[in-house]
Length: 107
Length: 298
Image (cartoon, rainbow over all chains, first blue to last red):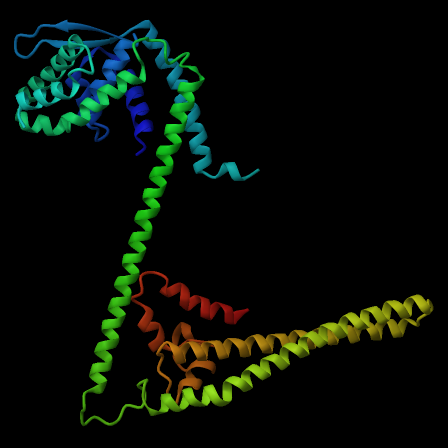
């Protein structure tokens, strides 16, 4: 698939997942893996960028069995951004679907 | 590749391009990922494979950093230039993808075709070598390349071809003349109607029927020419492309087929040996047969 498109879609998925509940890196990867075969290496760069842009905040949670985990939580800014992206996504879906069904040709 | 090697490769690729603190942060994230993977019962090597090539990961991290240089606002007001660049990248990506696909498709088709050609060639060689073998079987007159074939080709070249060309030319001339006649009669009729406004009704009817007759005959002649041209084309095709030309050829090819089933009726190329030979052609074979049959029904 087109890498740009894929990246955008993965970004939206990550936003939506973290909006549902706070998660750490491995958790996110596993949640995504349930639905699609993604390359784990691509998730972290996207997480980092979204954090840098202020859509996510992070906090460390010490754990007695495993490593200290960096949890990601969505910020207000991130919520707004997610809503905007969902609207855009639905618009694109509508456009693509109507073209794929051939409605564009019945003028 | 274990954890240490992976992390070393990653930091090596990032060093000098990002601030030390940033690299530390990234390494921390990937270490966490490794530990979580190991806790799930995977080996470090497995996790490394899942993460993908560290150089690629580094490249991606760098591209993401470049994507939004520092500020968090780039998405809202990224500026026309940035958006334009991104759009252009997308278009270029799409074009590249399309070109790759087209390339692959062409290559596959070419491969299929060359495979098909070589298979046919080997089949033909096998056929020929089996034919050349002297045997005590009775002479098989159905094979190409024999005396009869030579005579047919000679006849075609010396007699039939010029005659056919002349005949077709004659038909064509006749058709042109017919059209000219139609035009002339229309002109004449119009002239008559102008000069003598009181042309009797019956004369008008006669003229109309006359015109219809002329049109009908022209049409019939045209159909005949088309039919003959097709027959000649089919014959030439069979002659050139190694179809068996034997005593029953014309009966089989241009008359009502004797074979039962869906090949019944008026056909060119309804010879079962012919269609059988093309059945293993990748996928155009059925269409080719239908084309021959379908045109006939027109």
